[in-house]
Image (cartoon, rainbow, N blue to C red):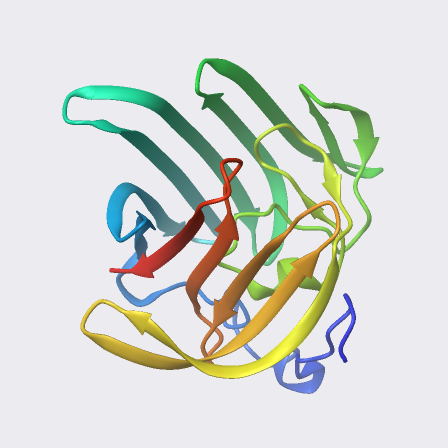
Length: 214
């Protein structure tokens, strides 16, 4: 069993690589997932990546709508912008509308570290290796991660549950399965590059939500 601090990096190689070489920025600068419930698509999760010099800006948008025809009885939207300098997060800004309940969070790096606050988080300095919970970077599992809905610092137990085939649009890929349990309960999947290729969790109504990479 592997705990939260998963030693999968190769420090000697990282030292000689250029900026972003250790970050799994996808080819083409975009990730997209269909969000499925009971076999139907209920939303989309997209992440776009813009690089300029030493700056990387990651923009995240998650939109979900559940209903019958034009009548929607549940809506969710999360938008987040994360700014990196080289391989360090320097700012996060995010807003969420969870079926009419607004949430927010922000973070700024100063001499004390990455300072976070949010609608459910009193101002705090995140632990040195903490990353936003935007999923694309598998290193978020190596330390407590920052909830980009409300700013809370999440401390789940992370277990490598094995390697399995994960469905993506057009086929399957071999992926490592990480199970998160505790204050975050979900299963997330990364291929061996390691790129994010899937997510699965149980919704409040007990239904299974699954991400299908487009």
